Image (cartoon, rainbow, N blue to C red; front, side):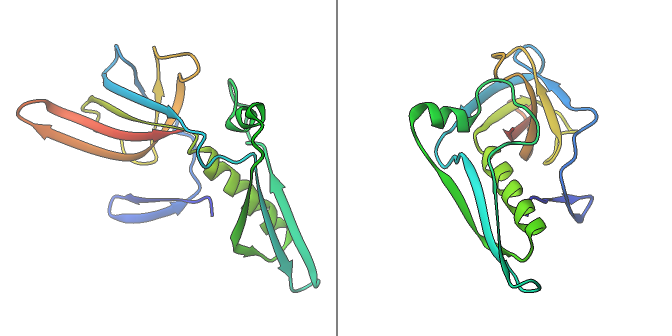
Length: 173
């Protein structure tokens, strides 16, 4: 449910994302030509919940998640929504949880998936052949709230006679 699907050397890779041991460092004075970052409250929820049924015990199961695993720097989307007085819960109808551990895992994964959509952006940099979906980059020399590690979601390498080698990426936290 919270598995990254990636093409890696011609093979489909399906496994949880792992931290990049050597993120690419970029910033306005370090290869980045254009950076556009958005903090988007649209479709953000303060919690994710899951319900289901355990056929082995004939009991209902339910779980809710409202915290990311790691503490965040600055104000989270959930805190911003609370400040604005917006109450919102994302009920995940599928997949149906068949045990309490599945319900817990689905609720946690659903909350993380939504949270990744809060901060996202587009970046164009001088050609970085090592960038690809799933890699991480570290933004430096930007607003302190936006500095740090971002994950590459989409990546396109372009070479033309006018601009040379450039890399266009969509990033998220």
